[in-house]
Amino acid sequence: MSHPQRITATRAPGFTLIEILVVLAIIALLAGLVIGGTTSLLAPKTPSPEEVFWKAVQAARKTALEATHEIQLRFDSKEQALIVDDGVAPRAFPIAAIAGGDATVDFFSTQKGAGTSGFGGVNDTQPLRGGVTFYDDGTCTPFRVQIRTNGGTQILAIDPWTCAAVLPAKS
Image (tube, rainbow, N blue to C red; front, side, top):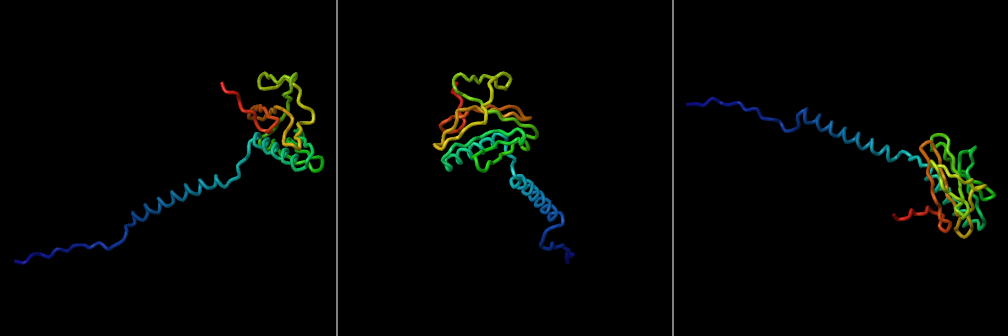
């Protein structure tokens, strides 16, 4: 008795077209995620008006320490910029382009007798004329700063010894 011979198809080693397309789709998806994520990392971050203020404060304090004379920090409403004035070459720190329009920075005294209470986010005292002074010993005029932009109003109290933000009192 002879058995009929079976013809068996042998599969050639390799991948099917569907498997290759699935792998390519996964690679394309991962590449899109990586490229999309890195473009946001590589794009320059626009600093906030508060960050520009702190850069100007650092520059004024450093300039005062290096120059061994007083440095003025003021806001120029025409230029819409904070100005660090050493009497020789003033440096501008623009705020308006960052704030998306008009910006106002006012400096207020924190000395006794110069009230700084506010109503509706606006101080009721007169701004310090000529801005604030940074001294060659690393200190500055005691002051509060009010930064008003289209995004709202921020009021910061500045410590005259460190020229840094005063930490809020614990409740």
